[in-house]
Length: 187
Image (tube, rainbow, N blue to C red; front, side, top):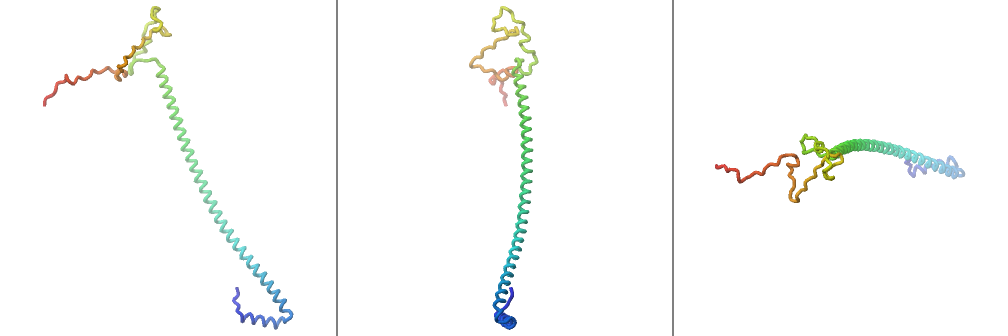
């Protein structure tokens, strides 16, 4: 605080002894000590208040920066959630469309399987049962259908014979190429 040496204190003490006198000097010194102590406490309280205010200002700055960071994180999370929701909704819509297309295809397939066999693929002939004459009373009961048309019984397949894919598709069976009968070309 003040830069007072021992010699200066002795000078102040001698002046105070002469001015105040020896009988009042102890009371004045005690009162001066109390006042000096109060002054020091007041100065320390002011310093503490200033430090608290500085710390409070720093804390407010930190608080505002943390709040700004929290708001930015919240905005980022909300935007990411909205993007994820939009992505999920578009995926759901695509899956719904694909499911509807699959259901439609399945219904068409079931409808095609439920129709009577219309001949080979690519054939424009009407169904076989519409060309059959009405059932006659002398036919066995297994050959007459509910509509009265004659249903031919399928021929049993031999265990070793497997129908060729050409026949299933309505293509004529090609004769096997006879490699031995082809003439060889001479070079």
